[in-house]
Length: 292
Image 1 (cartoon, helix red, strand yellow):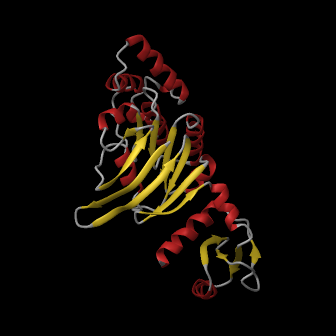
Image 2: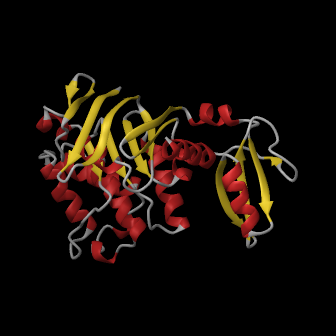
Image 3: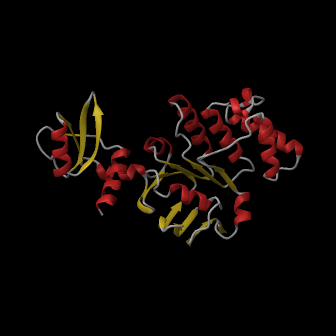
């Protein structure tokens, strides 16, 4: 269990990035969702020992991630949002180099671990290819391979599918799903679909504040029967609905706006009940935070 209590961070200039975040994150995949600038990367960098919080603590099985940085790095796997590689270096050579830096000094053991990770991430056939020639998805899979060195107990993955095409995204998500069974894996993203497909628990943060924490299935159950949809024939009708109702979101459907509304009962003529999805949970919570 990763226990986070009261983490706060203010940057120079008075930008308040985190406001007393407290979370209990169990073993398995945990989704941290929020818009750009919500504070997700700040929280990830604190947990990865790259930033010092102003207040608060984070502990994993008795280890203080804030004060015991050297010990934390020994049990940490980290794939940051911006992951750089040596472009002219073959993947197998760089992974060997990183394994040495992780403290895997036995040559035979290191060779077995590196080869196993290249197979696990489906990069074995491209192991001698220079990393500069890797696609975005291949680089992300290499990033997971280096994050898995030395059997980490905590894995942090920050915005891993941003910019990937649908096929690479699916390959990457399948890879993540296979590693999140016996360790704490935090997936930070603004793509709600990633969380829906992978995570048994999730949290939504915005403007440095925790808006929701729990199981996606429970959040969806709370919306059951309360989401309604209607096609707005004109922009004017859409604007009227947005001003008069609790609109969750609007989506273009064949050039027309589908308006999704939260209401206890049918909000009016033309509306039909819609099956709630995780995007409804996300946008409803963000809307409440903005109004507050």
